Length: 127
Length: 127
Image 1: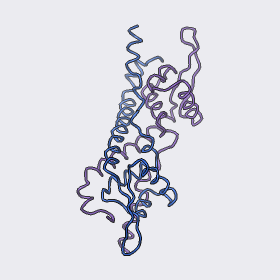
Image 2: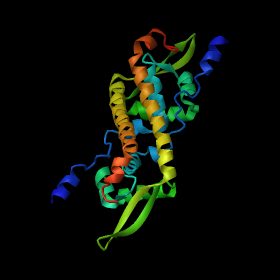
Image 3: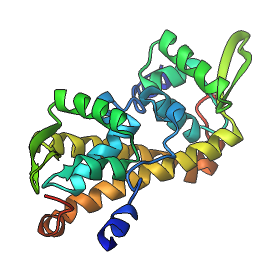
Image 4: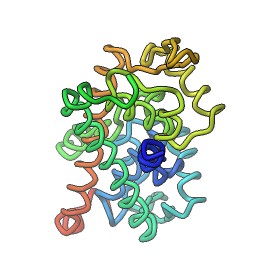
């Protein structure tokens, strides 16, 4: 019984619920990191270059991010030429920073785990 | 010209090529972190509990991880009852640790970015 109770204490220990699927996608992670670094916004062409994406791919991901209200799309002009500027929203910024605390936890969990292998190996769960 | 050349230096700066799509999936990230923490292996039931997954979900993700040779599935007995033990492979361990260095870079990039907003805001790329 005591063993069972103790075993249940670690339920979901590695579930990482806060890893929002919209933000966790590889390309969107790059887009959000770029935009967090440029809070006044980035032109479409600059964002595309920073993220190494094609026009089509970037457009598709921006649509997902816009629907989730993480990013806003501003239409304007640069020297009389139409220009699209992308900006992270304030709630997007807050949600992305929360997401990053989960990523940080994974990195820490795994680093702790791989560094303390000796102690785990001496007292593994079932092996 | 000088501006263009400078702008091109940051191509793919936020592309994060090393984010392997197999390992980056939320549930599989939990499975791999659990297994890195238990190098001698974990019983299916223990892994399921740690990751907060259903039998079906865990089986599906284990199949993907096994096909990618990240995880091995060992069939054995525990007190005469058949038991499946899951273990990270040695190449899986190495590949997962490489993946984690990319995650670490994202966390650092975003932390740097959000902390140095004042300087970015004073000199943004295009805004």
